[in-house]
Length: 156
Image (tube, rainbow, N blue to C red; front, side):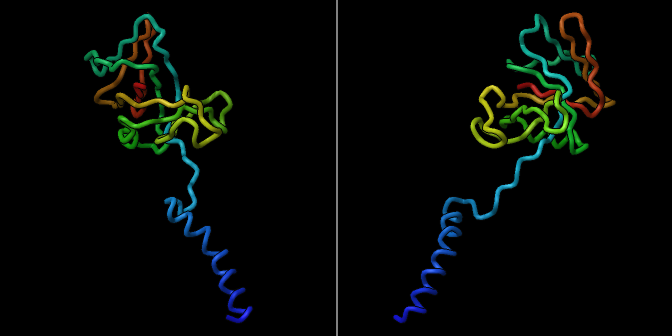
């Protein structure tokens, strides 16, 4: 085989090899940075003496939780948040608002944005959506928090 053909073959393999390896690893497409799905308005720890949630006039039975988050969906539709049930989410400091938090879907500890810590990753156990027909009221000891229509409580 002449030197020119060998050089062409070698260059072809050098160019194709990373693409083949990426295909085998399932990374043919470059990964897009995850986008937040909601902005956190309030975080409530389970340290509270008494946490009760009412939807309409009915007391809601909450699953055992680590934290409750009152969030505002960023897409404008709280129905998009329903897809988070029984999935993992990360609660991460906002890049745009220094004291704000954002919710990222399908994130695992040790991956993604700034190597997330396990303390930032939760499994969504329950989702409660406030609407004009079925408003949500959150009672924390003596404090009453009215959840705006369209906002959501994530039970983590």
